[in-house]
Length: 256
Image (tube, rainbow, N blue to C red; front, side, top):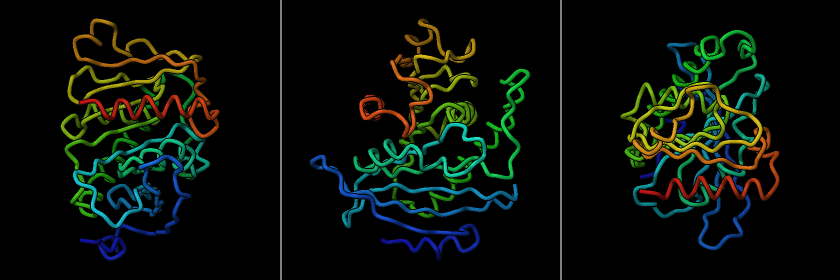
């Protein structure tokens, strides 16, 4: 069954547009379609722009899994949910229904840079966690045929702190958590959801954020060092850096 997004979301959707990305050159990859829309959370009086990267195909993808991507801090300039397209497009080309959320609005307060960052940034991470939950609930109404039992959250930097908080608060909703160099919010020590984190070569995480070796072994958590700078983990990275990150993420998603 095909769903009319505008009809289903007449209250929640403020804007919608769509484009089709260029065809992937890799064999067996899907062409990628990009849909953008803006939800409105009345309880918080907040707009939530989202981008849907998904395979362009008329055939149903059985048990199509969902990925929610969360960008790093962009100083409230907007548009950050597009600047990881090297990854979001790759995921969609492999068959994943990939949702990228714009967490920061131009009217938001800037992220604090002084004081105990794990405390003063917590309300900002909570806002991101609330955004994820709102979008997830809307998506379940829009696309009930998707596989929400295997929801994966992928994120970079400050977005990783948001998703680490979400996974701590809603572990029953998350199948896999993949953070790319989050630094402040501690990762959940758990086997469910399955936790992976990719680390940069230039910025250490705060004490207690990452699991120690005993915890990694106990919960089968993965902490993977890379030779990539923190600021090169979005579209600014080189082709090789993007390839490395894509390969790690796809490997983690394929693991049982």
